Image 1 (cartoon, rainbow, N blue to C red):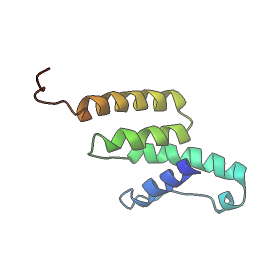
Image 2 (tube, rainbow, N blue to C red):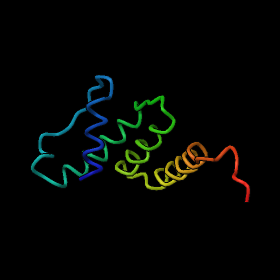
Image 3 (tube, rainbow, N blue to C red):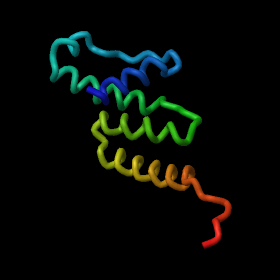
Amino acid sequence: MRLQSAVWQWVRTAHAQQFDFPAAAVKDSAVLASAMTRLAAEVIAVYRENDRGVYPDNLFRLQFVAGRAAEAAATLDAWRAWFDDSYIDVPTSRAPE
């Protein structure tokens, strides 16, 4: 459900982009699963984010929901590498030993 909530959040903030979502998805889990996969793929096609830390974090979740597990894993690995390189707190000087 967390991934579904995340996709809904992206849909709400997708710069007024309209996406079709079947009403039957509310009552039928099979329809919901199919609709979420399709919706995530559609959102990926238009999703833009200028923050290099936020974009891959959101993208890998969308890729996962879209059924693109290998792409999601690659995106997550790249994001982790970027995050580790960007946010390591490296002291500028060391105390004498």
